[in-house]
Length: 154
Ligand SMILES: Cc1cc2nc3c(=O)[nH]c(=O)nc-3n(C[C@H](O)[C@H](O)[C@H](O)COP(=O)(O)O)c2cc1C
Image (cartoon, rainbow, N blue to C red; front, side, top):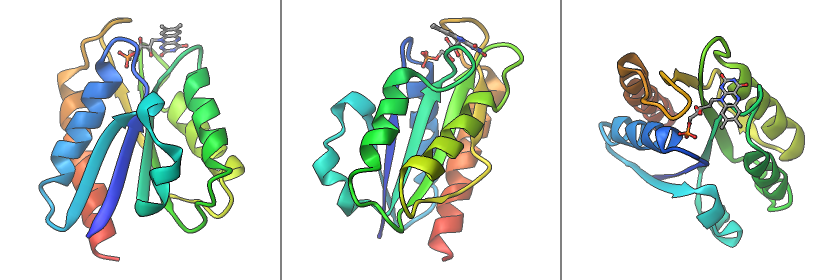
């Protein structure tokens, strides 16, 4: 059983919805156990039990939120060598993949021994407070399914 944590921050609920859609896609593949959690609720001491940690953030001023950046820095002190990571963002306008690329870079820099599954997912919202675009929801389900299939076949 591959254990996966999907941790996200979400001001208006859109990144949360994307996290849930990724989970929905993962559940299409047997043999995986995804947990979804807001980063502020994550018990850092419990992370060892996960094989895979996915981190999601809304794009705030061209990158991940301060809370998510601090969360990644905190993960760097948890001894997570060899764990697999993947990232996702939500954005408005022309910032496709901008935050997710920064997330991936920070994970690689701050978490010793992290293996980053790239490219991550970048989902457009239709307004500051959402909603998530229809194609974005479908992309999130497919991303979850694809990551799950990849992990299962290792
Ligand atoms: C303070 C703030 C700054 C933002 N800056 C950007 C930005 O630079 N580029 C962008 O594409 N979207 C930006 N946005 C829009 C967010 O990406 C959008 O609100 C978010 O995807 C919604 O997700 P959430 O409901 O999970 O918070 C910003 C939003 C806020 C609140």
